[in-house]
Length: 400
Ligand code: SF4
Image (cartoon, rainbow, N blue to C red; front, side, top):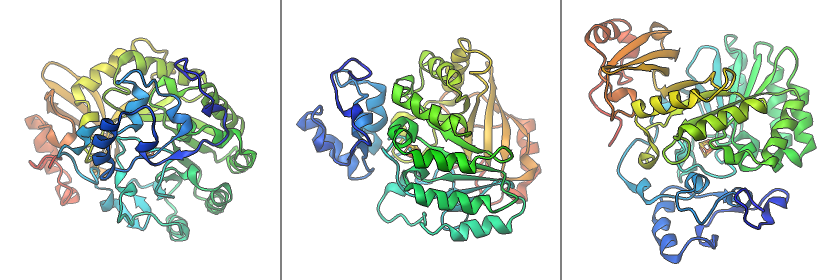
């Protein structure tokens, strides 16, 4: 039986098969497939039989379905390919350095399935050349930058890589004394928990390189409590027993993770199994993402509503925008204003800065907000040189 009580055998199969073609899905009508093909010609589709088995196909609004099955509204003209201007912080192929102590290595360009709202969907598109399989230049860059004490392996999903390759990367990073934390950003526990259940070698590798004085953190990506199947919980347990620290981060997405009851259940359940919620991200204005975006004010209120049903441990999260200028927490909304604070800042001048903006219930991103006068003046006066070229506060919105 699957999560919604349907008879199913696919979840018992070890390492589920990948499905690249919507035409192979028996639950979609021919007319649906024809319409959705227009979407997949632009934005790739990828799923696997395990994750597909979690869908309740009798519900057209099923959140798991919404997460991986395309929506024709993705074709609306909206958003940018690289909404957070990651190209501006790319210091080498597959190497991003934005915050002093942190470097990102884009370890591959695919995931076990594709989230429709992905902010890096450009990696899955033809002609992409951002990721390199030769991580040695990235390792060398980190070796030369003594200030870097934590490295995030991301992509795509690094756990798609074969275990021996992952071990070589972890071993190389562990040979660099100043790297204390290695983070692995992954949705594998949700998309394919058998990756952890079946591969003892992977668990041994995690145990070997997550040391008492320098841990590996697994930054999980669960969007909905229905992803927390028995298999996913078993996967997480194996990872925790290997000495890896886990946390969860996900965007607030219309129809998937925007319901206060769903959020509260997810965060509470995650706290029970040792994966506390770390960030809830504002959905970036990336092309194709219009149907998934929730305005800032609405998202803030829904998150606050969800927190009312959570323990302190379950609601330690920060609701943030991963803006090109930094990670900006939404700390409050009242009748007239939206209050923001830089949690991480690209430029020193913005560190811990508070911004007060006029309330705009339609705004989806910082660039659409207007700071109130006092804050506007201070914001522009300080660090204007540093920010030059990054479009902060420009009148041009993020939407084309
Ligand atoms: S897991 Fe992350 S990188 Fe992969 S498709 Fe989903 S949002 Fe994109």
